[in-house]
Length: 476
Ligand code: BGP
Image (cartoon, rainbow, N blue to C red; front, side, top):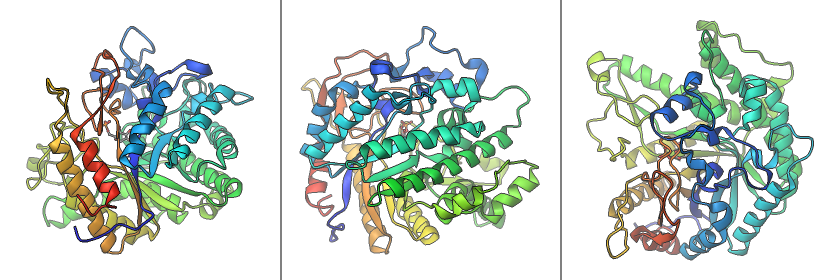
């Protein structure tokens, strides 16, 4: 490619506390929702908010409990990231490390100290920490006591948590994000927001009420961040990927627009500061009674985000034709029909580099704010050869084509400030809980049952990404 990315472009990687750290009860940490998710079918059912399937801490294997032991091995891992030339690492703070129950009178000093050490190690290696406040992470106590984000209580508790970490890390962290993939609340409500449903619940109403609480909490976090760290940037985070209409039938086109709006809804509020007309109509048409307090509209209006963070893995396709709908893609929580023009990964995720450029352009056109690509990557079942190597040419191919399209988007005029690819070191998969769905440039010796020595091994893609960063995106 004959094009250079901006000189201060933030190349790097992204992980989440619960998928990497392990040490799930160490140093005073409380239980988080993710600590109660086993692997397999049961995980899928619980993620959707299915309470009967929810038997906490039985004999199952819970991948988050040890994960890849990043909690103890982060210096070694950061050294490898530094070797690749990372400018940024996106991590999340586990809320329950700081406030073990979510409503403790005092924060847990050992938890605060862990992230101090982690950020120091990053900064020492010239790597900018990019921090998500909530990445599929709610203290279990808040679910038991309040029903999680369905309750307004969570807004104040989250504000306290956010204020605590802004104050503590104000000299170390300049890039923040509020809720990871906030739109996941509609698709995997337990994973996204700790929502578990009872028989007879008005699920839509609970979801949008919880969404309102998160949106207000997000705006209050933006306010606190601006006050406490005036030179920081704080953004939102969307699971992005535009919907294509399956045909040019206006019914398909209209449905595509509506499905996109299901996700844009969140960012419209976080970035433009008010509920869009189509959302108000949706509440009315579905007779949803969403309780908003006096003053909420003002909070939302006055504290909008500085940038739009988003993940992009694939585009989605929608149809109103029952024959086409029969052919849904697997592994896609957004309900996409198969796109005949696109290949899929072994996990059923559609591969669409051009869709990345389209999505970035659409987000730019809509919000006119800096964009930060905080997740993108290729999950695959890597094999280690007898010589101890991992030949992940398929991953390089996916990433190469996506980075090239990101370069094109920048040339289209889209302001993209960074790219942190997902899981630069293998971690637990969020949707399946499996270790064999790997994204890393660094292989971790850990299998689906939690066995393995946890040793780290550079894959072929390690050198490739190092070159990309070194050449600032010229050498793909
Ligand atoms: C996003 C999440 C991540 C992550 C990634 C890949 O939805 O923000 O936590 O894991 O997707 O998904 P998976 O791990 O299910 O392959």
